[in-house]
Image 1: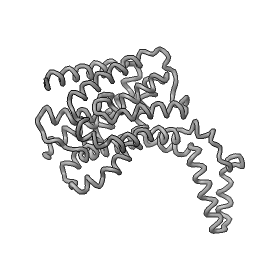
Image 2: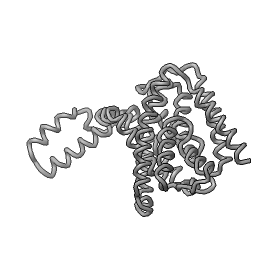
Image 3: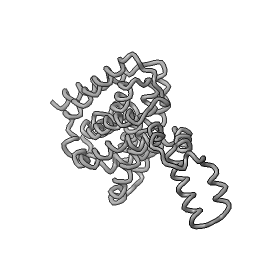
Image 4: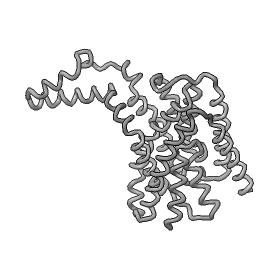
Length: 293
């Protein structure tokens, strides 16, 4: 793959991953439009590594806070300290044990219902199941341009309707486990190119009454584990095919563009709605139908 092609695909992946317009759909379409050889799922995953870098760098403080405040992490730390204490009877572990109160020694599932880290983990499961079940179709029938056009159109309609809900006051602090599961189920639909992972999860969050910025923010955080999982699954294929300069350039380009997309998307949504993305999806769907008819 030539360097210029990798740069173009990296730009598309970086921008479209976090804008609600479908990165996978665009990667398929750009190859069809210019009659490029399909880059394949392994290269798509390599570009996702670039967007993973972007989301980790941008939300690094958020992730540290989420992990530090997580009840689940605290319980794991407590159990590790107990194991160490049983294996090595040292006073230092007795002192560290005091970090956890007596009330936290017993596992209480009710605290997990508002634990953001646990919610993100559970919300990721439907997407993982969909990927393992239908993943093979993403390289075959799901790459049909007409299917992408339909997915773009339906996604635009859902995004438009959800953005018209008047009550959008919820922020991240109002997120519950039940809400996370609902958003996670919507995310599973993103296995189909054209649906857009960010688009469908933002739509679900808007339907649940979250603000535009909070919906986008949670969508971006939720993308982290699913991208990591996809990278782990496809990394052997990537190694087998070989990592050359063009792939590294694509990853770097996707990381830079992804970071910019997150930053300006959140700023844009402070005073604006999703109409521009709805219009773009419809226009692209019409273009696809005209081009491939």
